[in-house]
Image 1 (cartoon, rainbow, N blue to C red):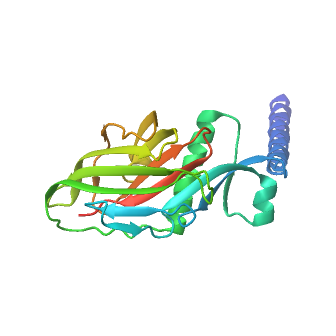
Image 2 (tube, helix red, strand yellow; image 1 turned 180 degrees about the horizontal axis):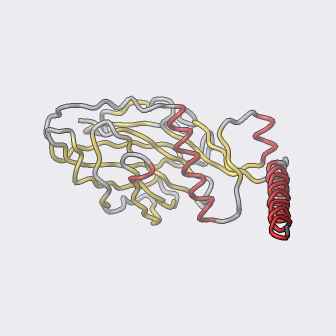
Length: 235
């Protein structure tokens, strides 16, 4: 009998804890107020005059939509009033917010400009292939300066991209080069170095494949205000 009562008491305790957890979860869901700090991600390809080239800077073309995703800090009120699709709540923890911002930018990119990468069976082998591009550091800002990047790599007959390296510079303003990715969030090389009008040295990056995405990420002086520039490895 005592065992039965003890068991029923234990069950009651677990049920109460369950109810409290549900209430707690519901409360957390209601904590987003107009003043809640968030990070938003927006396609600013046209506003930053994005340009890309293959083989030579004399072969410049306008970037397709979704090539530059700009993330910035805001408050939830703006999200609600403008109907902004891509946003995430900021926590104040720098490392966590850095990861959240990256995830948000990559999600926006994948939905706004889905990859049309094909599984090529064969490629023309080439060493020293080069691609590059540039875009303004801040959308629709008269004081914005241009960010430039170049990537060079080798291509084998199976369309593998090897010996990848990249470099960057600006039109004069000082930026921090956060990282570069060669095929999604799982293929990133962290840099964490500042750069200005002088080209950085060539820095090694992770091997990839033809048609995979290359991503260049930098920021001016705050971690959640950054442009993400995208292009593709081509043969």
